Length: 408
Image (cartoon, rainbow, N blue to C red; front, side, top):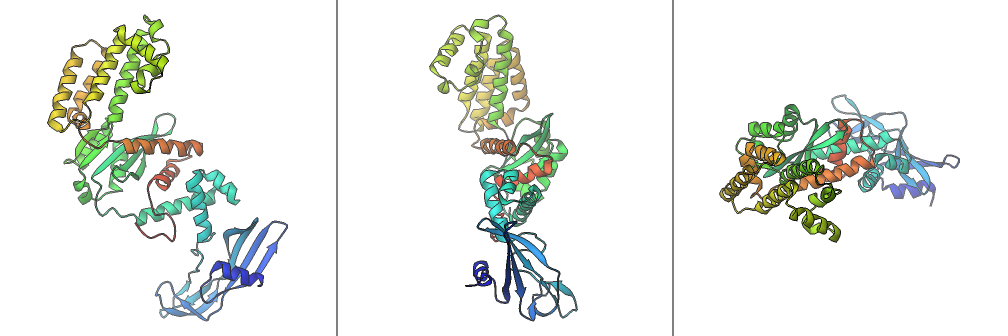
């Protein structure tokens, strides 16, 4: 079998396309495969009719999958046809989009490795291409996936969460489909404007009216925009953030009390913030000593424990009753940082009460948030929010990103 015949078989070329020559450059370890179109007519991409060949473009070169350790390129002078309307158009080639500089199979291989290692720089190094080639492939894959994605029926429950983009309070807002565990959209910032953008880019007015639950933290922009855009949806404050507020109250109280109770509270931060069942024996002994000493810090910890016990109430009336009792109990104390938390909870009373009985939370969003941090760490940060958005949607949008993949 000749070299041309070998590549003809490997490339599975359609009728009319033939490998005419193969040139191997051993010094730079490259293979150039030259393909020609042999028929005098071809399908016009505009009219979809068989049309006469008008002329041929100058030689185009596409990066293909490697042949052993040799970089491989496909070369072709692509025909142009003239249709019945007299319009001249370049025909489609079976191995790529005409505008691309790489074949569909090469693009698929890049996507596969990128999904596995989550690092654009290392993926580029593996294939011997520039970072910008890999970034372009990722960007086009996301654009393709978003065009194919169908949200014919709005998710029952959505989540709004923030993710740090850079240091210095620079964030992106992440919109999540809670039930399907996927990121729907990302927008730079966590302002009212950014929150409106991320929602308006994703849903129609009709779809917004069908959303039943919105889970978020107590960030005013999220709460105000969801109230405006989805007035009938149930607002739920994410339980993770409620516990976070209580943990902060514990730690602030501990720091104040550390000045007078240094022996007991020294190196106790993680002892007090960890779940009790996860404590080591040594940590458990320290925790019990703090608890028995009846310190102010211990009182705040008990308030947190009581709050956690209220989670998973059977319905909203029970949740409202239990939250009222908890707030009344807290009001009898003089624990400054705990009282501030109570003020915050009372400000958003119904949304907090909903967190105690609703099955929905931002747990999926928090898991995705952790995964996003992994992508951010592996890539050693992102230069701009658009690149960050692309990476998040590529890895966690559950998009149909392959060129040959059907819409989903």
